Length: 303
Image (tube, rainbow, N blue to C red):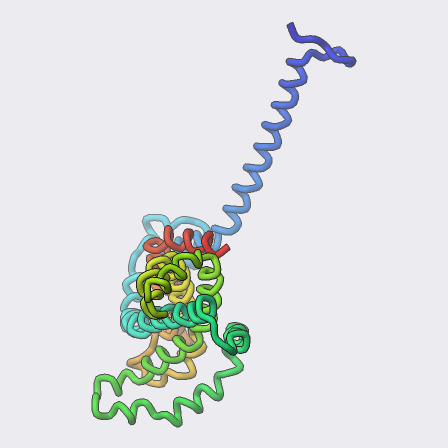
């Protein structure tokens, strides 16, 4: 039988009151969380509904209001894709190699800075750290001057196919060089968690530095490769600044430049712009879905 406390309430009454308080707190917490989710997803929802509206539907309805059958259309997606399809191909042509190369070179550099002993490591590491914090805007003028002096299109005149894509090759090299520092730092933090006993055992067996990297370090690096590939792909794919500086031929326009061209000079067709934004973002979403599990492993392994 439940006993009463000094106030005359039984233990059962106190437990019931405590549960009621917890239920109230839980309801308030869930309400706040749902409100925050709705607040942060409202721009995405507004963009998605706008992309399926005609121009008249966008003008006469709220952005958050779903399109009615009278205003529903997929024409904005067709028009946006027609404008972006060349940019999508051009972006894929330089983003994929730039992403892979920067991750691979960053892995090499991090291996040398963590698992090999040689003089000057600290100085080299400081240079990589400085490269991470170097803003894009500070290198635009020297970058343009450098590629003007190199004249890559002239050097590749013997191969017209490559010469016509010189702008994209310049972007590939630039983004690869710019991505190596951050990839090196990410890989270095991951390699510091690897067990040195395996590497020491491989050295005893006569394996050289490259053999150790190929047979031990590289297979264990797959989670961090997922992290760097996702990060670099997103950064390079969404970049517009370097493209505006280096890409001069309209046939080599990347997806961000093509997306920028969806802005009308007289009237703004926001439905087409929203559809184009979703189309341009689709490759990065696919990358996150494909490498999501490895990305989580790499993040937890580096922490």
